[in-house]
Length: 395
Image (cartoon, rainbow, N blue to C red; front, side):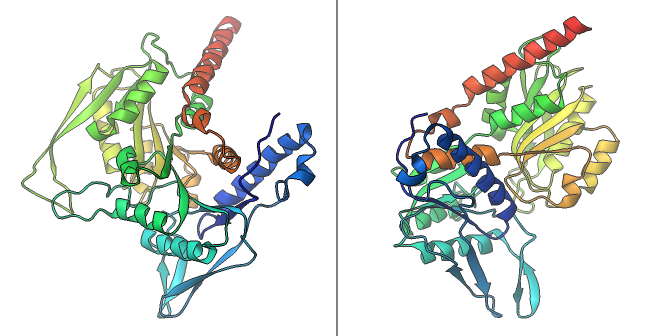
């Protein structure tokens, strides 16, 4: 294995709320580096800092009683290729404000990220930020007199000296236009989701077979994701069209007055509902119920980020009513133990994928093979089909 020089010794900083996720990445990265040493033992002395049991550097986020804060580092970051990893959606972290415990909001997480960058600036060889969920990604375009929060956030990170911003399945991939000459990597997780789906649903029918599954988008905004799944799996595509009353605004949204399904009849087919996030879950549950009214078969949801802001009680009820079968979400953001233990929930681990991205960027090599997952998905589907054929012969 030919190994290129690294930018510098890699270092990981876990922001509050992302410690478990980063610990898993650290373990994956260590195993990756062991593979290099098997064929290149000279790296141990030629490349200082290349091989360490832990690539973690602790950052202390201190809050004063007034709610103000500061960041301090436990060890030096000078000369390191630094990766700051944060989970903006983790509301389980709290701090005291005037003697009252307050859960951290995404805004609080972002300000802590800024503090750590300021503590590292001018010392680290390179600063990279990994935010699996792109902060303010749902506010990427302006309507009327709205603020452009996502673009402002990206520009602020650029001015602070961040060289690379890595995120997963951004709500609006076009947000990279906010920094046209800087690196914003929106990484897909399609392969990881399909692999987990086929592992948990081995009898799923794909690739154009009779009565095969169908990819469905809950609305027209998510069509691009659903089209990709439909194309890669070789299955038909459907979507729902919402007719809205644009003369009214309820909690910042125009109310839906009618709901239509567009596509081949879903009767008897397994359904894959594709979306980038579940927030309250109302849209997903409404979509699943409408599909059941059309006599759809089993219903699976493939969701990158599961927020479940209203809890999972309604999901438990819908599951008991057999409205849906499984929901797959990545482990890129915090989930309540209650959700992780739900019989209908599947947690998809993307820490190995993240570790491979960090390793490639630390070597300053192309990550195209990690971004373009079509070949890997094709190989996965061939193995799936071969296993099904073998099982059918055995029966």
